[in-house]
Amino acid sequence: MSDGVIKSVGRIFEILEFFDQERRPLAAKEISKELGYPLMSAHQLLKSMYQLGYVDFDAPNWTYMPSKSFTSILDWVPDIIERETSILDFANALNRETQETVNISKRIGTQVRIIHGLESVHLVGVSV
Image 1 (tube, one colour):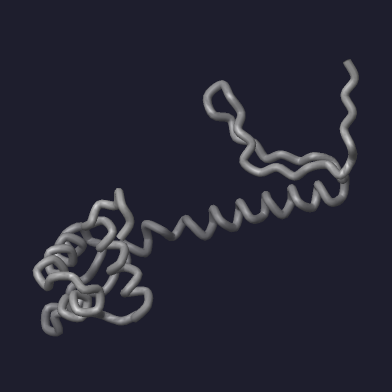
Image 2: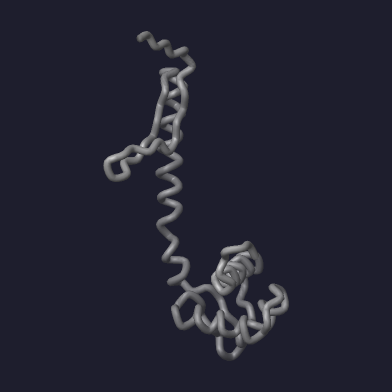
């Protein structure tokens, strides 16, 4: 784990990545063994995730699985990525068509930050 990462936060994401890899319900014992965590730590992390509603617990089988509420907190992400991709595609097409500089900017307070820039193919001359 990287320096500066809070251990329990890193472990939660490692658990979620393991669920993504396995794509099935997992027992704390499996997670502990695969990720090299103490069994009690795996239990406590999964119990916290369960209490927060981000994993479901199947008591008869002692297994956990990411919950529907966990997936729903991220359901907006594909829309944002698609919208940003469309904007970037438009900027690239505009730059190709006009061969002029095209910048996508974001206002931050009283300043403007260029978040994506495409340069003109034409030379720029400045006279003083």
